[in-house]
Image 1 (cartoon, rainbow, N blue to C red):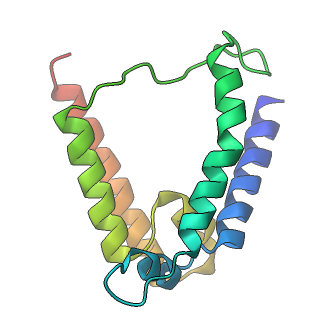
Image 2: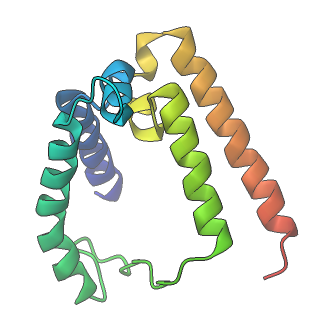
Image 3: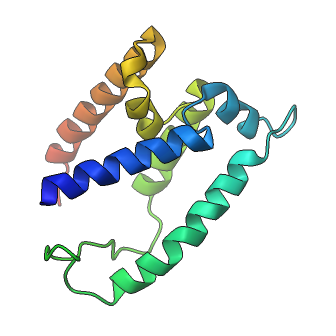
Length: 139
């Protein structure tokens, strides 16, 4: 049941990304182009997503277990640190250069466009590098 619900959630997420235009690098780059031909439509998508998420997240904070019975795992750390800021900067720079981020990249991977394949390979290399560095970091 857990795998089925994860699959359905992934399909719903991917469909939402496609429907909202988040998987269109041109639309994303137009959204990020504040000084040029700015397209505010993705801001409306983000505001809508926040509005939809507030209720379930508020409910989840009060629960110890998920609907399917797994332990609830929500972030507890609230302070900003250099790792969070650095990771956010790297993510934002990559998003601004490519016009794509990991969720939409997975959603459009099967289109076979070489640019998405290069993006995914670079993303996986970054994840491997992070894992290697993280295992060396004293905790």
